Image (cartoon, rainbow, N blue to C red; front, side, top):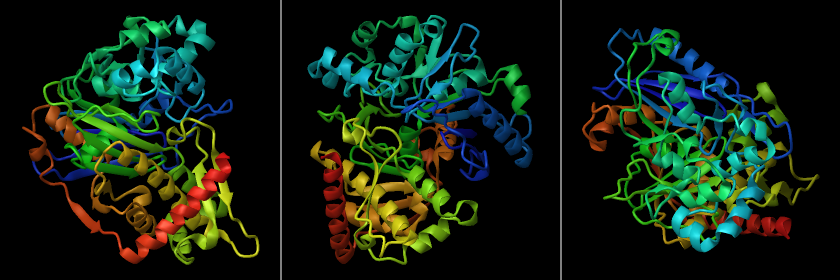
Amino acid sequence: MIGYDIGSSSVKATLLDADSGRVVGSKALPKVEMPIDAPKKDWAEQDPEMWWKYVVDATQALVKEGDIKPGELKAIGISYQMHGLVCVDKYNKVLRPAIIWCDSRAVGIGNKAFRSLGAEFCLPHLLNSPGNFTASKLKWVQENEPEIYQKIHKIMLPGDYIALKLTGVTMTSETGLSEGIFWDFQKNSLSKDLLDHYKFERSLIPDVVPSFSQQGKVSAASASLLGIDVGVPVTYRAGDQPNNAFSLKVLKEGELATTAGTSGTVYGVSTRAVYDPKSRVNTFVHVNHRRQAPSYGVLLCVNGTGILNSWLKRLIGGDSIGYEDMNALAAEVPVGSDGLSFIPFGNGVERIMENKPVGAHLSGLNLLKHDKRHLLRAGQEGIVAALTYGFQIMKDMGMNLNTVKAGHANMFLSPLFREAFVNMNEVTLELYDTDGSQGAARGAGIGAGIYANEEEAFQSLSRISTLEPNAKKTNQYQEVYAQWVAALEKVKG
């Protein structure tokens, strides 16, 4: 099976042996981060053809390196960056760059819709404000680029577009429509009220398929390009956060997953359709949701996470310094960074800040005392503090936050980051040898019937380590968090 993870920084593809669950090969492209275009303030766009190019290049390399023979590839799964908007015409040609997850241009449109539709409708039915999600981004296109809007045949999320390129078939999923705020949770269908309010035609929305299902087969043209068989089925698709939770086997009430890539997230599963009254965290359909057995994912997201760490890398050394070197430097200064606090909200508006433009800030900077080591430590501690701020919102919603699972990747490779995360949040952290592309491959196995159930699919999932909070460290990091909150309140005030 092959799993694709279509991120905003890179595209990763993994080949998984169905019988053993062993990784046959993995490829992440490009070697440097993919560009995000910002032609105007608060904009963030990418060319969907760039994603497809790296899917092709990664697949060709994997097929060659893995010596995949005709007939061996049985299923394809797709994970993708959430909340993006891809618009295509009747010939399936992209009409404009994709408006991606961290683009903030539609905040005002979503807030206006929330006021017009009313909280008494939006929260029980949509579980969220229309906010800065896909539906509001489409409304922006309708209002600001009417000549493009008139040509739109279908809208898609980034993963839907990759599936279209593979199969020639345009489809989406319930979980995808819920992340775009098109889904009515009470009616279990597309929200007619939202479509009518935004004056969207129903025909713009692709047909809906379950996350685990037959979703089209690889076309002759794509098979030739990729170097694989014609007719290989696409049998799984999900946004990156539901998929990350799935890749960690987070499928039951009370289970939690976390990531710290370009953005940082915590994703908890609930059997109840819970919501935050201020939409600071968001509820979507989880991948294993069934109407007779509901499953919802509650997502806390901090946009300014790994992107802050990569910015610091460019600032202090660029190619001359590695992330391990940065972690070692940060560890040379004490917990709390000698009074330096970093507010990390510099990558678009943040949902936990109610979509208000807080920005990134350093607080407590002492030019006689602080150096790059303090800056690096304060960056990591500030990211964890922002996640802790969101944790408190989830706790207030009645969610159980005791044990969190994460892949051993990105910022969780940093011992300092792990220590701060465990102690500031007072949680147990379990680290696993997996990632989103592996999860997508396992999902493809379930969707294709190769695996009978989740238990069978995850027999080979390997836990690397477990970290518990330490009483002394917890007290220290609680002080860091209090210092950070005080700095945040000063910025907000």
